Image 1 (spheres, rainbow, N blue to C red):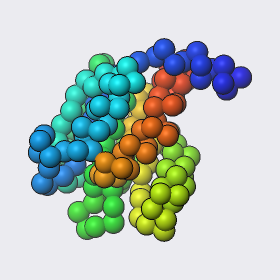
Image 2: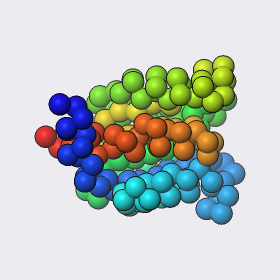
Image 3: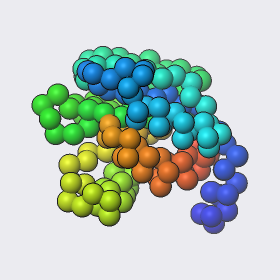
Length: 167
């Protein structure tokens, strides 16, 4: 049954917002935001919005509220600000919006990261969930981490997740 649902939902194309949290990156230097956008579009999904904002919880909270209110956004993928440094508050802000948490996303991400980087995987606080009927993921800021999250977890299930939300 799962495989049948997943196969049927592969034609669903998501309209995504990509948000990079960084005090130093620009459009020219944002390798992770570009990687997310490129992987989404290569899989047939659309990037409805792309922004780089500073590591500022208030600014992120306001931006997420705006993006979640938009009819042309099905999923939001953030990257950066997810570590344990004093300024890293992305996870706390993102979780405020969750109506339904997807703990398996973070668990699987850390498990897959373990096989690539070893014990450093414990530093990842990546999370995913549903907020106001939309998908919301917070990823680490490294290009390798976003590639892992998208290719191994998000892209294989994106259509299926949206199918389930639209029932």
